[in-house]
Image (cartoon, rainbow, N blue to C red; front, side, top):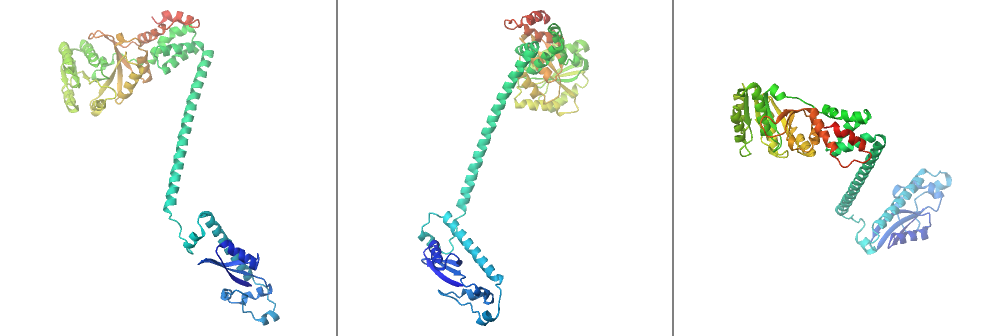
Length: 462
């Protein structure tokens, strides 16, 4: 084995010297950076018989480095008189040297790739073990890149969701149009009836349910069956307040006629059971003249009127009127989005020992969506029924009836004027259905397709 030390300014020049001097079979035994360049120790196994004696040499014999041949200390007698087979130690040493050479080559290649811009003098200043650059900056850059990547991905996902939502809306609209066209072809009478019901301010659910009757009736029979079918969808409790008595509270938005309706119920009950069996309470201390208005009604009917400012006072007054058959409570009118409304409704249901039945007072002149919003807010407390007011001022009661049907809210009384108690009646669902369907006749000039329907309905809902 021949071992030689080489000096060069960089690794590439040193490897070229090793190849020129020892050939391509030479292996790198060690390398290190020194002042002025790189020092490499290389070896080549040129004498095959001496490889058999290498196992007998001490382990540190190959460290005795010189620029020429290095004797490994083997005895000639051993070489002449004994045949020793090459031990596997030589192969293992060669394998280790090859692995070390490959590892050093990979490290130098990685160094060249990582720092291609560093000149030779900068690498020499770094020393034998160049400290790695600060890890905080690359880590921060990596985190920033990750955050930017996540933000870009989130923005892309949001954009994709918006596109999917728009496509879904477009497909829904297209399918709805196709379904309507299909229904017009397969069931023209039902499609025409549904469009007229929607024009009369019925809700889409109620209009679709009533239009579905066209599959079971002929057009002439459908006209006659439609009012009764609508009346069957309404829940009518009749004159339940007067018959049952108890503690009843009237709730509802502002201006729907709660105080007037309460006075009408009180007069109706006093006519059947006497004024000494009726008592009136008001919790409205917001509106000016609220107590005086109710006190005037009580003075005319001959029944007591009290005002309660809080829950404890309400409980005391109810205890005073415990012998009365009917106690009516007039609550303050508040918008359904007024936070004070929730406190007022909670006070009505705070004492579970007092079974207060609450009735929602609704105006027939309100828009369907406004009435639906009011019902959803006042459902915070259990509602026993509803009273529909101002029928004489309403153009169409289809919206109010649709809200009652959708919320399954029983209807007890209707009012159509200011007179007490003449302008209050027990709800007649069939009469209300005919009044709501009468708006079907108040449409534009009928087309040739609608002429037969208009002729049939001209008399049916009168």
